[in-house]
Image (tube, rainbow over all chains, first blue to last red; front, side):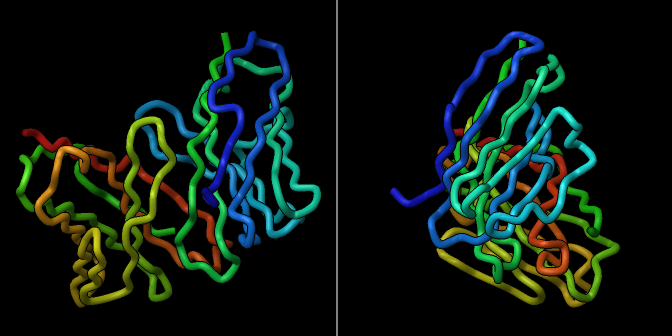
Length: 114
Length: 112
């Protein structure tokens, strides 16, 4: 299967702990995106990369959030000092740089902060 | 990005055609109209995209009138597995770095 994969699929953590999620995009895709989705809402854009460069960050991405894509392949999203409000589904997507509106999403990582 | 308005939910029955209309009165000249489908506990999946008139693929049809201020996603002969949330997105995706802005979507429930 050559789709977008995300690990872990589920994460339960206690408030104040740090968590890290991984996304493996489709191999030939230059662009990688992170979104967050809460129950009953559509996904919200967090940040995106073109190759290894992080080109845009949403205001939703507080200082406790950091994302990397060190070699232009997989990406990690780290949340430090988690809060209950961070509980959400974190979605990763990838696309070809020349794509127009078509992104391929992974299954997401569901984070629960207790 | 242009704001979109679509119904919160719709019910249908197996075998029927489902039409979801999305309003985007402030659509700009460079904007495309894109629809995504999302099943529970999965990421969204691209369905169809268009700029004007009609676009059809193996999954759906997209009708866009001449003024482009609305669009209608048509799902022919739905089955139970078409129960999902459908999102209408409008934007000049290349200029926006391909960033997608989702609204609340339309929850479609297909009944037997």
